[in-house]
Length: 91
Image (cartoon, rainbow, N blue to C red; front, side, top):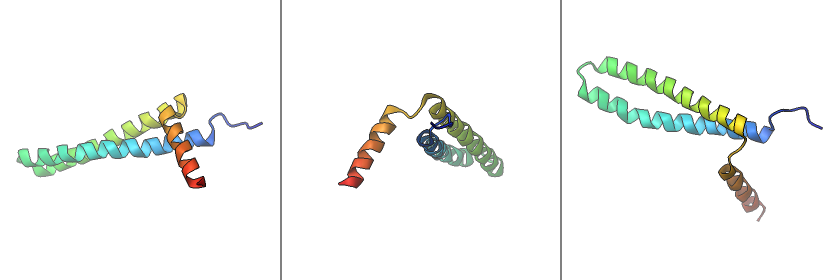
């Protein structure tokens, strides 16, 4: 019997969820920063605030995804995709 509280597959899914969600958050903030630079006269301040906001927001969003998957388990959609991938490799 294993003494692990969280299965390895759930930890892996949580790490992948963190990366995916953080990347999505970054991709949404890049256009906002560009628009801010174009619309304001102080481009250095806009870039600094945009970069800081991007880092903080992406880390927070990724952490929320990671903790959600750890606490609730792997979402059913992820499980179905993993099973389909596994069987596709066997064929």
